[in-house]
Length: 166
Image (cartoon, rainbow, N blue to C red; front, top):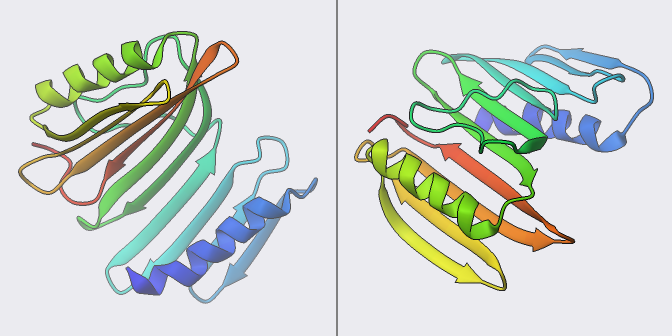
């Protein structure tokens, strides 16, 4: 996993550049690119354990672990996915917004987590927002954080780190 940090950091830096042109950079470890139209950043890195792929952008398809889905009616603002072939796992950081309240979104993910076999470890309300974390018996985790801003709710859902299935 550590061998992937430098190449993925390079991909993150390309994302931050905000270039108006599509750009692809190749290196011995892999390839990093930014699509000028969509803003999507992609990095593919070859490791001893297989190919690791990172994709980030608002148009990256939402593919969450079993039991989890995008909140109904929500608008995706960013979706970042990291996958390691050969059982290395998947991590997803999904940012979205909704006109529904923080509590409505939190209840949706409480229910989803419970049905997927996750045990809630933290469930807190603060300043109009929610924070929920949970873990499956196989070490998979999820975290939801929400905040209210100008008549809408901003949310981030993170899943991964271990076997995400219950």
